[in-house]
Length: 173
Image (tube, rainbow, N blue to C red; front, side):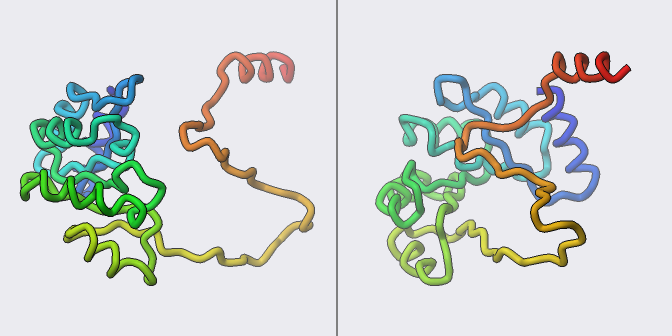
């Protein structure tokens, strides 16, 4: 939590226009205590809860918890792989929210389906990642890879293994 609070303070000091979090408990429920602390620390910046919301088993209850904690927006596909697949669930969340929180549709929204997603869900805001892979000028031999693939497991991340690092330093020394 200390690092998140530091990041929120830094974002605030640098003129950010909002903060995003996805604080969940290990049982995939909203970490209400942490969310409240982050919302308070972020003031006056609005806080958005990202698609970690989609992992919660009771999204109706989770939405009320986020509203009560003072979250401004929630990004969701209503637990589906894409916003279009979850359109009915997103629409239900929009109705439940009644303007108390902004429900932002996200997940697979592109130029060819954005109108359909908005029409089916009733959202006023969407999140889309619109990008293209751009080739760069390779400076080195093509068979040398300077970066590795990201894991397919959405819940995985890479972190430093302190024990292995200490061993490496000791072995190098």
